[in-house]
Image (tube, rainbow over all chains, first blue to last red):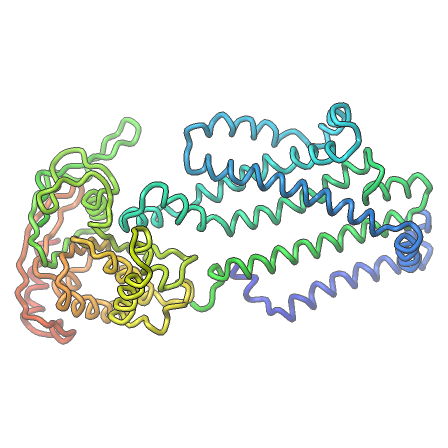
Length: 260
Length: 247
């Protein structure tokens, strides 16, 4: 937090830009000198061409929409189920231990290991994707929520009691609002995980979506297309992250340090 | 109004049992300002938390207006060293927190909150969030929040302990003025003898762990007290006397 504050905003943007530009420069150097064959790494220009072609001739936009739709439904499902459970068990340990151990068990299984099973159960449709996203996101979201709730400062709870709050009021008026910012942060982390796993699921079995485009392009040896989609995924990731950041500032202005 | 009778408390850590408080008894009259002075780690905070009902006692009796205390409630307010403001609520909402828990009309809440914003000099900061306030202001919000709830007894746990010297002095004067106006019953805990004498009508010196009352002193300086009191010979003598007892 402190260090971030010290970097001025203009500096911050500039440094990000320099990072990307030097990356691009390296790419240009590698491809224009013929050091790497275009088959393995096409030049930036041919990737731009491929991108335009993907949008105009192959309707890439609909594949983007499909992937985004899958992530959003998966994300909503994860949040709707894992966050309330995390809060419930964070404030009340009674049935916590049962669920905690199941969640730990699932957290250590790579979600990709469930893909074959999921295909067997649900086919290659949307439910299969949703299942994979749920199983890759829910255990983590549950634990991160649980942590946020358990990290509520004890002093605030004590202050609440001495001001006359009932146990119920402590949950709703102190623990919940107090842990919202870190739950929001967890959601930001979660959506990036879901981005990873939607692509993995689409790579293995799908008729649409960005992962599907990557695997199709690989089959037809269109390396430029693969790179184009990868870059698009990166950009979509940046946009998602930015939205979460803006949301944080808007919803939780009280977390910002204004002075001393 | 407050009667404490042979209060004891042990903490258990595995097999080891530590006596924290041993046989403390005292009475405090309504509208009195009393301080407890003890060294760090002597169980002062534990004593306050037991009185407030936040933690259980092992033995003894606590009576507030002849009624036993079973759990924390709005009748016994507490001010903490680290302010414990709710960071997601602005100053006005923090002060209104206790009032909002009950069925009180918004109109009445506004009236009470405005009154305490005025008294604590926080009117211009009503809409600010706690993170933009200085330490002294934060503690004034915490005091206003507790006063707005109209408790019968207010416990203060080293409330000025984390403030710088200058702010500390001005907060002491602020609290004295406040007490001289409202005459709440206050128990003030500190490790600063000078602070205790300046503020209180009575000072209890606490022993090291297990905590018990070592000695009590009446402080009869007339009120209203101003900061210059600290420079008088009488004040100086009393401070020396207490310090000697303390060591």
